[in-house]
Image 1 (tube, rainbow, N blue to C red):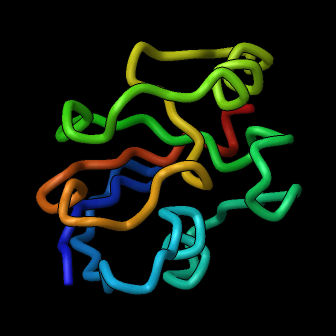
Image 2 (spheres, rainbow, N blue to C red; image 1 turned 90 degrees about the vertical axis):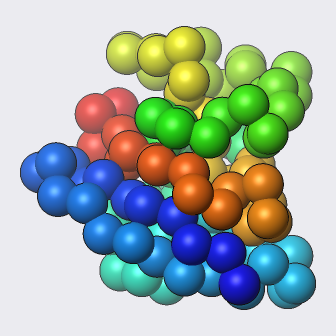
Length: 106
């Protein structure tokens, strides 16, 4: 299990614990935790409605793929640490990270 912090659209933070051995994406965990993540495309990196900002812990996550960057570039507001939650797999690399929801900013 890994634990990371999610900052919602109101600025409230909550620790989330998620299994790191099931191949789940961050988007799936956020939706299961009842955060307002649209994920219109179902996790295919085609819509950017699962936009998040990695406030802490981005170094271990690697760089966004070209497909992910193409979608991120369509957003009205892009941050240096913007990512698509559907493209981040739950792993020990997320342990201790702080993720800010941005989906409704789109």
